[in-house]
Length: 119
Image (cartoon, rainbow, N blue to C red; front, side, top):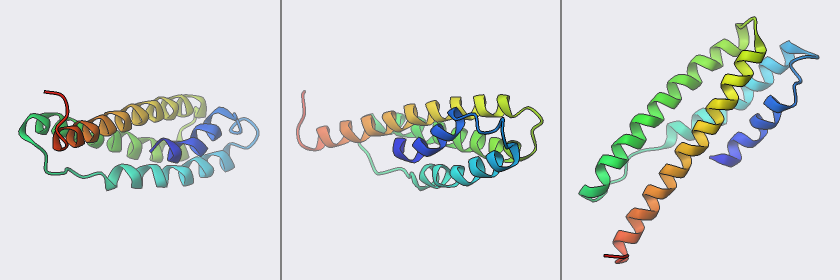
């Protein structure tokens, strides 16, 4: 997931919205599509009981992130203050990266349990 957010993160930091806000808005919107698709593709795997609470939490977190992403995707085209939208999108990308790390941690714990990790 972090690689999908890289171009968007660069676009948000480049401050291109100062020179040409219209083009910046559409570029940001275009770069949000693969981020949304990546989040939408996540699904619950069958897990052991001790991981199911964490898996449910990760899915709820994903739904909240998708909601924020959908809201900001609309706002980026119409908001008068693009600085605020850019800051909110930057924060969202950080939260998505943290979410991806939790997802990787969950997958690691699941595999560790399968191969007989620490007891």
